[in-house]
Image 1 (cartoon, rainbow, N blue to C red):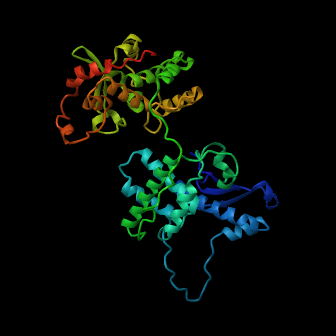
Image 2: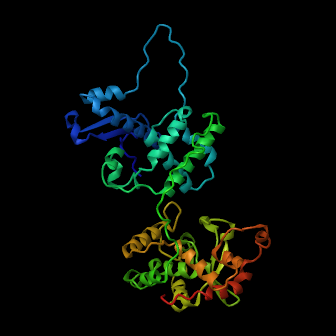
Image 3: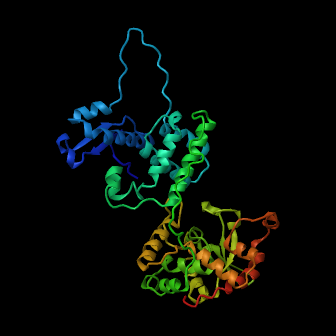
Length: 411
């Protein structure tokens, strides 16, 4: 992904590139400065810091040369007997690589990406300050300004725009949930800084984003919404994963990633019951130990030809023609599903199928532990741990009856 406000030379060195707004066209077309690094993380941090400086000085300079001089680092004066200056404190951005190597070494790529993105947001909002200067004042400023931060900041036309220019126009702000997640990730980093002596205390403790008064998003699908989706041309004319993934979701309650990553060999039979073997082998992303399970295949799916589809895919690596993105098979199907769901004006997302299935099973009299087995929830208490290492196929007769209680007459 391109780093905002940078250009990379053939030598590998990153340069800061800032297009001068039209109201300051007397200064020139653009400003370019070498960032003196070929490391993309350092380049991102330095570019973010330079952008803050440029935007604060652009109003007070008469020429591009003056702007360059004012944002350039000061050079120490020469003395006959130079005194040893104290080493400057490492900045928030420069210490992140140490944090990632120590704290995130075994984390998933998605977790590392989200943590690095959260740090980038922090640096853009308050600057790449020395770690020991990240205090309560900076923390409050960060959380307050985060409420007006734009979504998709580094994508599309926003990538080359300053934050001020984006906020001066029409844009969508990040959700309250995204704000909380961002603060949590930065707070985890701050805790590490404290533990390793770069910071005396975590300034984000006790500081949280303002609670949103907006109504919580509805997660459970209504009967009318199910009829709208499965009766739409989008579904009726779909083929491959576009057709089967929504059907599997509403008849199994399985997670999108679990379904999108299936291999033909995961569709099996035991004692006459056809089932889906959901597991974490071959590098798949499984949420928890309870996610390893056997899910019976509903008779309606068989009527619609699911087993025939599986037979046609024997010998393939995956059941569906889905290209993984950073190890995630559900990423692209999620984007496609969200796009068409929004076109139909349907509020709940694909994960809402799990909520819908769980509620339907409860209303049908399903037992709580059986519903947890089917959906792959983690153990709720110590009793649930007993027998968790037994053959999951022993549960198939009970779960098959439970699954058959799902009666979506619109599908």
